[in-house]
Length: 332
Ligand code: NAP
Image (cartoon, rainbow, N blue to C red):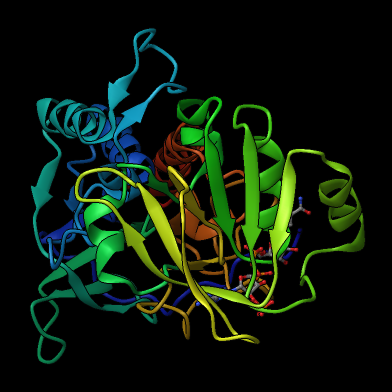
């Protein structure tokens, strides 16, 4: 895309203005922190704060167990351990890490305003550039058992975890392109893959439907919803309710992949920056530039397609370099 970003109104540039504030601490935000710290930009990274077991600083890898596809770890690495290494590396180069949630962002004038712990009065911080790395959240079914079993047989990422389900009977919940893509990927490993969908018609594109239906390992459980996932410390079964007959059955699946969509975390700035039609933050010309001069984005908040830790980290590096060059070109 080739529109150029619009410039926010200029204002003062006093000493307490940070060069760069990074919002979000997944692989994208922390990689941006490592690069901007090594470029002597004294970044402040506002990493979020834990509000539940499924909402923690560090992004989606904090909710996974073993990561086997992050280059550099031939024996695999636990998701939280990997993020802790990212964080230590950023801190080693002097990135300041604040455990707090950003409550308001004002991108309408330079320097940008960043609030934590409230949203009135003077901004808590001001910054010449902002790197947004707030990620995306997988939509979940809302079951209590999901919190317990995420990373223990329950997953939201087939590419990440499919390998662990070799020769098992597993299920995928959802009826869109993601669900069918996950099911087809999982069919390489699993013995059987059952797609559980709440209607009797898929939302997925025709071509994906045709492929999934031609796959001998994949079957469909129509008009069914998941009422519970059974197991104390690993998935042992799934309780389904048939919306037509009313039958409630416990199915003996040992793996569950929830694929009912993702939501980019854009609440803080959705009314200030251009978004794509699907709600993801828009970046321009294959860079991390957003629709506002001095605001950059990386990771899953601007990527609905790849959604991998390694691609998020790569885009964090891009955002750091873009911010550094932008600051330099503006005399900072
Ligand atoms: P989606 O198209 O929104 O589909 C979500 C699916 O989950 C729907 O079938 C929906 O059921 C179901 N669902 C939603 N909430 C549910 C709940 N609480 N309980 C049970 N089922 C629920 O999301 P997506 O599949 O992630 O796709 C997002 C976008 O990315 C789409 O535009 C898609 O085409 C695109 N995409 C493309 C590809 C590809 O082309 N290879 C791959 C992945 C994604 P209903 O149908 O009843 O609403």
